Picture 1 (spheres, rainbow, N blue to C red):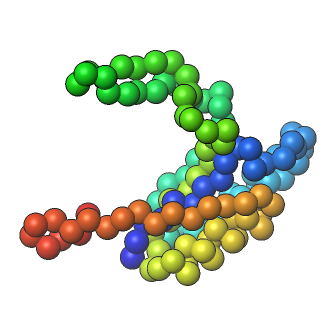
Picture 2 (cartoon, rainbow, N blue to C red):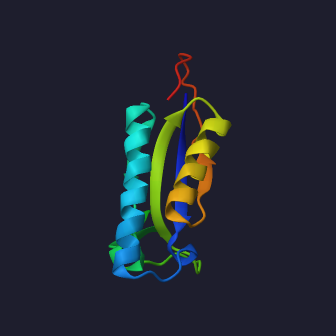
Length: 123
């Protein structure tokens, strides 16, 4: 089993009415419920946008410098994500496809790396 991040950027989502977003929420939650039933769901949150950024942290001369707001050097901003624990890339792609169809906007899949400790256990 491996953990995968399935995510979308806020900019990939076209403008929606409140009613349309409500229908998308129902459809997305149905996919999440199916993930839970199959035992692959880890965590998700689809309520992110530029307004939810709290702070940014950078290191300067060995000290943390905390500033308010989003400071990503990109035009795209994470809009939502889901973490699944599945057997392989194909299974992660399957769930990303289910979310893409339910929500009608693109999804991106990233595999979290598996690290092996000195004693041979993975984390």
